[in-house]
Length: 320
Image (cartoon, rainbow, N blue to C red; front, side, top):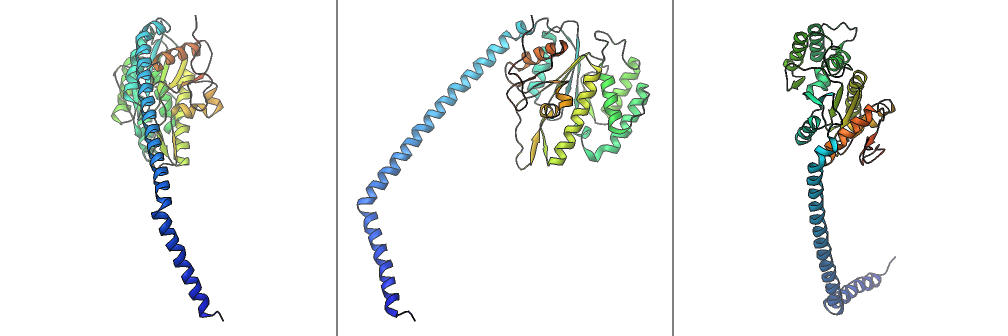
């Protein structure tokens, strides 16, 4: 049995240690620790100020670079796509300013902008599959399109026939008369599947797909990426060149995965080998880079430009 004196000695030892700690903390160690903490706080403040100064300078440099890119853009892209017609296909949640800048660079390059088609979230919503199938059938009928496809594959087929054609500068190779095409487009607009800047959408030989972010579980994002790839492949198969452009991905808080159309194209070889991408189209030199990417694609040189995963070059080569 442990003697009471053992407990007494243990208790006394604890109190002695506590007393020594208090004396040292209030005496010689207090100044030393205080000085160290004060020095560390001062160093952190200095480091923070230096980082803020660097950030300010970097921001000014980026702004200056963007202004320069905007100033020289008309000269860089002038005449590179002359004789072509381009349609802009916008994914849900795409950046509005990026869309406007890409629309503006098309005529600067010498190409004709036939219109902009903006897809709604309903285009990708699994719960809207039945309504999409109904709209796809009605639009195909209005277009006079004979097809064995149904559902989403038919819907993608209709959109590709409405937007692109390898007949280049004219609508002579388009499916359906202009009245039929307008009727089919109206079906899709009325079904809340897309919006169009024009009711009379002439087919183009170039397609510019503007990417938008989407997020969710692995299964949700994977399914969305499959639809994106199917759409892009349909546009690429019916056009002379299709390029997918986007900005940096903003990770969605609380979501397992965030992706976009650029990543969807790059992560599968069957699309990466056929469709070019630009992952920094939101930057000042983005619109010009997209035009150069289209020009290279017309020259049968597929590339993935930028700094994100899957990029093969920073920028396209400038053709003579």
